[in-house]
Length: 248
Image (cartoon, rainbow, N blue to C red; front, side, top):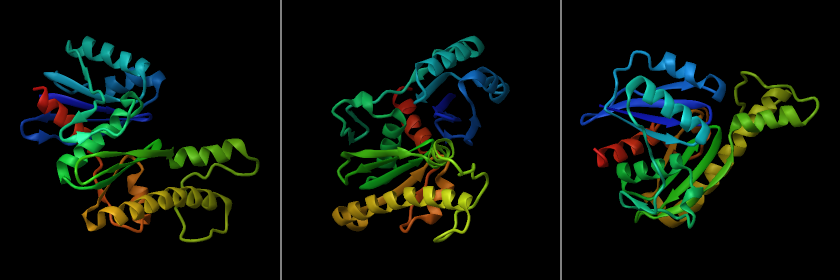
């Protein structure tokens, strides 16, 4: 039994994996200061896995803490996924492959494996990433923008008179209060970029284009989009599972 772990900037997603596929997927919020306690609580009832495969975008210091925790509790050396020039029929667009986040690479690989089609792959997390994939498995590169929470916090922190929006729903069209104006404006900026990229890709790939969305904020964005997206909440873990199968 393998443990698959997707370490993001604010959440850790994980699932068990064997020949029958992925188990139920779980998620837990963390920050660097409380990481060990989060792992103690979240994984206290997990039996020691045979192997641990990790996708990590949170940096070396976080990786070091994971290595120490896994070594201490399970005596297993975790395997960290890395970006490559080619994998599973996908060719990387980046000349400097180390500049591409491993989460994006795994999501692109999983999308190609699942659909074998041109695809627009959107990850709505702390940052928003949009990657393109041709109908021949060529990664087309991507775009990065701040996630909705970062946009909202930037307004709150860098301006006067704009309060933290709190738990406010997105409005349709113009708003009549500041908090809803911030939430709606930030949300629709994300939506406008995604819709534009899909429009441009469809002009080239027509109806062959598959649109896939993942990430913790995907549920808040998907219903605002003008085109149909497939919600794949654990796309990175599916890509990690492919790597685990290859290395089994």
